[in-house]
Image (tube, rainbow, N blue to C red):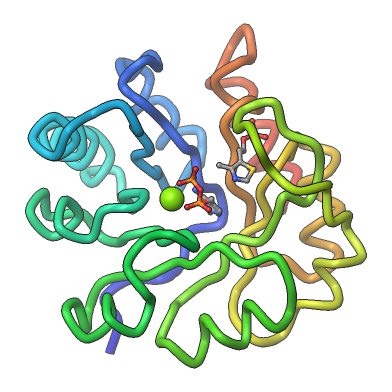
Length: 200
Ligand SMILES: Cc1ncc(COP(=O)(O)OP(=O)(O)O)c(N)n1
Ligand SMILES: Cc1ncsc1CCOP(=O)(O)O
Ligand SMILES: [Mg+2]
């Protein structure tokens, strides 16, 4: 049995963000934080994750590490998010039976494969255009969310802002994952409140 449920608002962060805002973001209703710091080595990523856990767990939010199962386990995080070039979901599940495991998916077939491997949720996207990551495929659009829904909880990602957050949830998504809609806003905490309100 899994310890925790899948968050609805995943705020993806790196060491470059204003981490002093983390407790206020939890207070605003952000229930998940994904530590995504491609430039950090294992030690630095572990230290960053431990800091995030310290800051957000008292408020009940969940911490997920991008890419690195080893770091998620070492830092006492709640979960790991795995992409196409990371550890296979089934292998990760064997090593970590109780960890929340998310998998990047771009189609219903991907979601079915992730579910078969033991994933808890699918990071589904890019739903919209994103400036936060280079080399992404064309946006899938909101209709793709509906087509992929019903297998695993879908966490929509890619250019999500409050209006599109409401749209993807109406289309069948469980929640959203964002970078720019929080961190590139003049007031990240107010922006997070808007996002939380938008998904209901
Ligand atoms: C919730 C969520 N969904 C998808 C992704 C993308 O993960 P990945 O494909 O591994 O790409 P990187 O984020 O590692 O560049 C995500 N991080 N979170
Ligand atoms: C990592 C990732 N994978 C698909 S879109 C994306 C970036 C999401 O960032 P933003 O919310 O700013 O579009
Ligand atoms: Mg990844």
